[in-house]
Image (cartoon, rainbow, N blue to C red; front, side, top):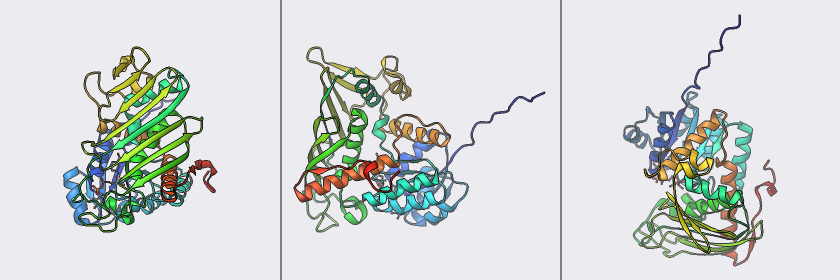
Length: 377
Ligand SMILES: NC(=O)c1ccc[n+]([C@@H]2O[C@H](COP(=O)([O-])OP(=O)(O)OC[C@H]3O[C@@H](n4cnc5c(N)ncnc54)[C@H](O)[C@@H]3O)[C@@H](O)[C@H]2O)c1
């Protein structure tokens, strides 16, 4: 007689973290919430890793990043370090056969990002980039309304991401240094999130950009002759023939993480503001409404991401938790809709390079599609 098949739950993933700053905290909380073992951490020095081990409740501090990556018991590596280090760290982790979550920007140029897409394909592991605003339920609701045609034929797409944490000349950070942050700062840092969201929600692609950028302060507390931009304004055309604009600034007083997108169609306008993520504004010629998150009234994907009942607010960390949970589900073979992968990181690098080219050259730039790049499958 055939024995009953005994099924066991997949063993808990063991997660390792590289970097011990703001994002390592956010990632470790999300990994813990998704049921992983918070197994190891390595940072810029053994002392920094040891301090983070206690602060974040990680099982083991590693003396070097290489030691962490070479540990055969670690399944997934989260890269939470300055931008210019992402490429080499992700490459090493993929070559060691790890699943990788690599912070944005995936790389500081298109060539390195393309190579990482190829390496991830060769490794056959899951490789994702935290474009986490995709995981707000009301973003999924907006996306579903556009995809199902309820919004009508799209006429305009616009958005902005405004911050003020670099408002004063005394404000400084590794991000202003092109050697650590990459040749683009404001756009690569937050414009990347904005464009990912505009394309994700609209289902459309930016095909042509005309951009202007400015560096408000050429010197800051610890940096002279700063080459990276404080703000970018751009006009763009899309694949479907609509037009749009965007504004990105890290010197906008009073704005903290004011990521706003607004998409207008023949029937309605949808507006989402990341600082009020429980609502979606539904503009109509008559009878505009503010939709409030309520899983019973939302589309299936928005309801899936509603981990709390209506009236108990969800926010940034919940979106991050959902991103990591979906990454881990993919590692266990369950690929869910909307998971941002290294290809999305490459798409972002292409847009960033196009924006820089346009603003430096004072010209319109055609944005290549990922598939048009040589060597990317
Ligand atoms: N997805 C998001 O929503 C989001 C939000 C903020 C930041 N980020 C990204 O996360 C990354 C990290 O940002 P952060 O705010 O945590 O920075 P941070 O300065 O707070 O932390 C960076 C950490 O990396 C460590 N580090 C530096 N160089 C290293 C190296 N070569 N090897 C190992 N460790 C090294 C530092 O010691 C520090 O602990 C950036 O790329 C940023 O763009 C993403």
